[in-house]
Length: 511
Ligand code: GLN
Image (cartoon, rainbow, N blue to C red):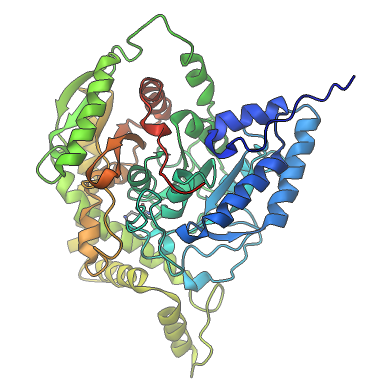
């Protein structure tokens, strides 16, 4: 008699399982990592028109899947083993090109993997996830709509005439369209939370320093932070547990806190609980500045609906104030370009990336290589950054912005004296039409109003699907925690997701 377990019907929609669901099928031997990888690669090809991927390499992915299958066959049962994912194209990878969405790095190949990539991957010591490819993003992660990619804009799978948000727009669109169970993203001023909100998925930006920045193409180093994007808080918790942790030899700003298992508590909390009010005692602070006239009524309605669900789960809502919220826009758009202008000075046509074909002397080579390699938004930020750092303007702009940054961080601590987590919208509107804001960079800067302040403070924040607004487009609820409180955020989000099904809704794209 055969002892081979019955195979799953391969018509089963593997892409609907999510990370935890797929991991369970892999561990049970119902499906192999190679089969799952083939399934997702076929889907990525079928939905290429979304523009979510910048590169795939089936040969590499399948070799990784075979390595994961060998570990499964040898009896290893780690939570992510054999589950596919894809990386935002700002994480350097040995086996795929890394472009950061820029012509400057077209065809660039890194000799090493970013720490986050190796922690998640199949190489020794990694969690055993299979990389399906690299995801489109705004050039050097600068943008809010993914229209600044030098390659192509990403389309929102809920309505392909709209943006998916940015800068991790490829990551968000790929997860929302079920092309991948999960993806990595980076968040400097909202780039995990805002695209997650605009595409109806879950994403968390951890406390600054929680994940190593080693091998992340630098945008604004005092703000850049990696995090997972997936369909649920549980799936994000599984990924974050593998991604986070100190990296003292490679990133001196990585926190010296031990790696944390964020998922086990969530799984334990999923058991039918005696308490009908699992969030009893949780005080949720609502900053008045996040609920004003600047936020569209459809977004506010969805956010308020989600908050009343939190009340049903036992949480209490309290009013708090973050008085400097409006200043977070000018402060961020001074500090981030300042750091960007410094970080991007390495792209000089000598050491990395694009070099002009013709030039007269060294200065001309720098000038032509940089003019040809950088797109409009990167160029704009380099110019702003250089200006605010220059002699005579440094005190007036950069130093002033740093001082207000400190005050913004203090305001959060005042608010956290009254509450445990802060909640509000992620974006003042649902996803906008492609092209709608492209002639006016300030219009897209203003749309970052609810995500910038927590980034400036270095706080963890997440976006969870909270309903739908105008045009049937997804709306996210933002939860901001105090430093190192990722577990609390994920726990609250998980309880919300056990009680609601917004995170399970899928856009109606063809199979
Ligand atoms: N939208 C913001 C910007 O354009 C944030 C980008 C990010 O978080 N990478 O800078």
